Image 1 (tube, rainbow, N blue to C red):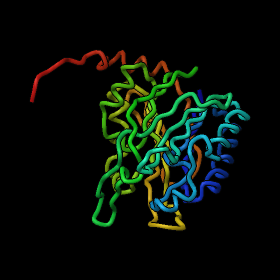
Image 2 (image 1 turned 180 degrees about the vertical axis):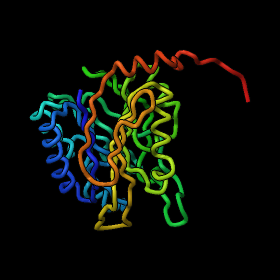
Image 3 (image 1 turned 90 degrees about the vertical axis):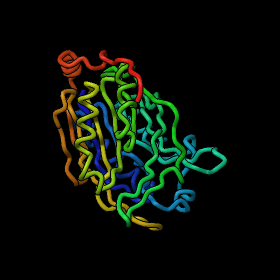
Length: 276
């Protein structure tokens, strides 16, 4: 299976971002991709909860999701929408940060709501409180596809290795980590974290990313790291998209999963222990 990773700079205008993704999907298919992945918060990058409340929708009414389902059906591809910011029925008004897998018939076959919230102070000037606006998910998700079993995660999840080990032990061969990674933490940790998750599990890791300076009509602007990555099951970096927008391609070979796990079968070596 040829996979294509889209690297984009989403603004706070969902309709504008949708048109960008549509064009890139069509180009990816022309170049042979059968599985296309978009980054975290594909539909909007915004630090303004007021603006988000104005432009976001419930999943059932979301125009980005509906349009991308139509595109997947028309193009005959598997499509991972890395995540969408969506309204929910939660009483506190918080949104969902939801990754969605769509099959070539345009059907949603899996959903994953980001479990781990990015509540950090990266620098004195750069603070995030994701849990203020988004409610955390509670369930890990793996989906079976004709080209392999895919474990779905999002961005900050990558710092919690037990999630990836759980997915791999459940049968995942490919792990997806769509992201809008902070530029500061990206420079320090992005490559190392993704390589570690691949090495620990013997999985492919596919991480499509937001990149650059994100334009905002309201609220503060964000800068993200880019460098969409594909890591092989043995830990090699197969693809690094750098910091520009564009499409990157990789051919997946699940025999490499079996080879890596055959060399170091760590998934079967867990032992119970006491303490500390």
